[in-house]
Image 1 (tube, rainbow, N blue to C red):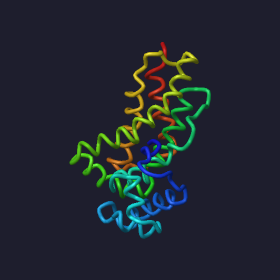
Image 2: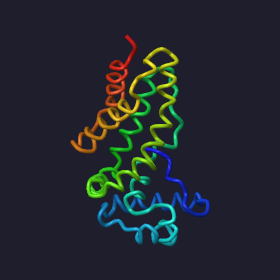
Image 3: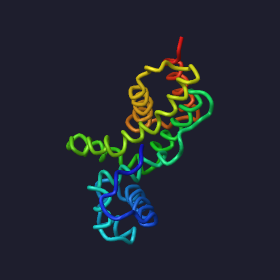
Image 4: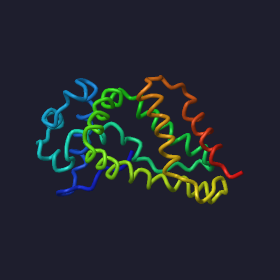
Length: 195
């Protein structure tokens, strides 16, 4: 759900970064979250453990980035309507949450978040906050078009959208039909439109 946290060392080698992310997602699917280790990721990616620890404080942050930030690389959608933009955003989240890596990682990540408030704060600050900032442009455009009021609580809207997808797919385990993103986008856009 956002770009990676700021680098603490020398500039990242994009090939190493992609190898680490790919190795992490693959291991989570193959062996599960609990059995995925930094050592196993390093071995599969062909890097040293220090390379990983220079970029991520620990396994939860690494797994979160590998599994839940794929949609963050795309530019904010611009379909011309809020409902259209939200549909594109939501479809990305639906695809992310129904991927095998997400299903394998989510229970372990949730347990780690519950046990470690500092971890939850790092994920919120390093990943979720920048992602929300990036998406503000969608709502700024909607306000400029007169679709929503300037004072719309964007954070709450984004939490509502992500929460609906998370609950429907991640917790309840529903297999979303092709219309889920469109239906959620329509409901939310209608709920916050200027009347």
